[in-house]
Length: 330
Image: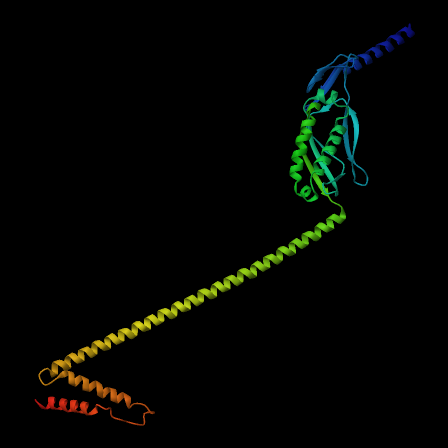
């Protein structure tokens, strides 16, 4: 009886263990932004969504997929290794491709490191349409990157990073659509030319900077000379304008002085004419006075050593005598 009791307990424990295993295999908990592909006897059955899910043991089995495990070696290098998992991650995934050599249109070998941001939008196609999704995306990216860079020269490649990113993303997104993958973004991290090319580019850059500095200095000297010439021109114009205004003012002053002098002389003559109107001939008096003033001016100066009388002096003397007679009449 003890043997049968022990055997019963053993069978009972085995049944409990089998039941626990069976229940465990029947229940699958899927986390948010994850999915599980279920197959029935090797054929696609359904996709388990986030939450508590039940499957038929033995009949239903999760399909394993390849995932990429990333890490760093002891010397700091980044590595990626494939691993198998029953869960499909639906979140956006960042894949860092290893650095690769690419030949440009002008036959320069450059090293490029790229980042790819992709997301699985259809778990069924991601499992059944491609065997190794990460490797397929990597090879597809490398091939198309070589094609794009091969159409550009080195200088164009260095300044067209955004254009390459957009074109590569468009190509990859279209090619991976049948795999149930959405490529959101492609980024070229580094574009490294050979050391000799870098030295040549640095020399070219320095020469270009020196050329620009020389041009800027020459332009500065040119502008300075132009401004100086314009300043001298304006200064000369202002001086000429000032001299012109001064000459005009002097001429106006002389003219006004002459007008005032003529008016004064006119007034004097009028007074003389009025004073002599009843005593004689005023015209003879004025002519005689002007003649005498002219003789006085002739004899002025240190160089005038000879004094002579004009040919008509007797007529003038007679006019003076006539003036005397006019004043003696009163």
